[in-house]
Amino acid sequence: MRRRSGTLLGLMGLLALPLTAMTAAHAGNGARGPAVPFGSRLKPYAAGVLTPSGSRAALDRKVIERYEDWKAAFVRQNCGNGWYQVISPDADHPYVAEAQGYGMVITATMAGADPDARKVFDGLVRWVAAHPSSINPDLLAAEQDDECTSVNGGDSATDGDLDVAYGLLLADAQWGSDGTHDYKGLALKHIAAVKKDELDPRTLLLTLGDWVGRDGPYSSLSRTSDWMIDHFRAFRTATGDTTWDSVRHAHQTQLSRLQSTYAAGTGLLPDFVVDTATEPKPAPGRVLEHARDGSFWWNACRTPWRIGADAVTSGDPRSLAAARKLNRWIVSETGGDPDRIATGYELDGTPISSGSHAAFFAPFAVAAMTDPDGQAWLDALWKKMLDTPVDPSGYFSASIQLQAMITVSGNHWVP
Image (cartoon, rainbow, N blue to C red; front, top):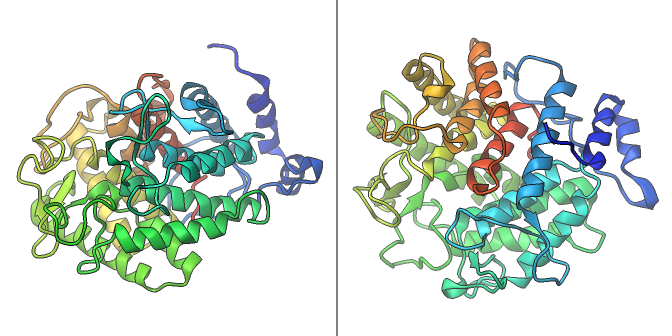
């Protein structure tokens, strides 16, 4: 095992301290410490939710170790200007909105374990401010090149914007909004922009970005991995806008409908849903990215995590039912062996490709938390994640796995 820097590992001992001591330890120099320090679990999960076997401190240490590796591999300060960025070597461009959103959510959550969390977060905020969408400047441009310049029209991507807004709400809850950046004010602007230009007012389902428009060829297309139910809850709380209740209900209704109509035996969701304004159904082949746009592929692989994150934090019966359906099927499909989770499936459960990618097996660990009889399966998935190190060439899988580990260890919370 390689030697780690002392900053984060030296803080691991704080996880054993009482909460008041832990908070005070990170509130030096007169600065406000994080209100929900990593490891504090101030916002407990719903009753009956599982976490892996072992002490909380041991689970937290493993997450911190993985966070440190992720941060070393992907967090950068390129192009000056006080910016931080999360690089995406396996994406179409060096910097994508999805990666910055992941970075904001992760660093705000890790506050209290990483003494530089706020500094990194603020650098990401500066990056977002410097790269506005060319269509709605309150959203983030989706792609940047090696020179940190927005490319491909400079318009937005919904998944990145949802996490940016959510990360800003986490930051406001952690540090307040009376410092260098008004996190809450920025979040509210971002949420309003998502509602205006990334939400179909006819269906209240998310579109792909502000470039779609109301009547264009992609206006009735939605990506299931963008259906982040816990984010909609946070947006409702932050804004007081009941529209976000309706948005949540609309997405949960379609989750249930898609599972029962097109994946009754598996619960799997497709990467993309078409005809959202009439009768939503899985994409019939390539509609945007790949011939498998209608399969459980490199977008939908995240849905067990996204659905499960709401299930474990809210206890919502619909989210629990959707997560448990996925979990029951994957346990049966693999015989309880995480090594048998394939890289992609048709909606009927037919494997697409062999191999073992964290982007596919890690999300199932979050769904596994919802099975009160599934401790052995959850422990096996946790071990699988621990045995899968960060690959510096693959930010996508590494970022998904880290966030799954944060949730599975009991450290995900909704502002």
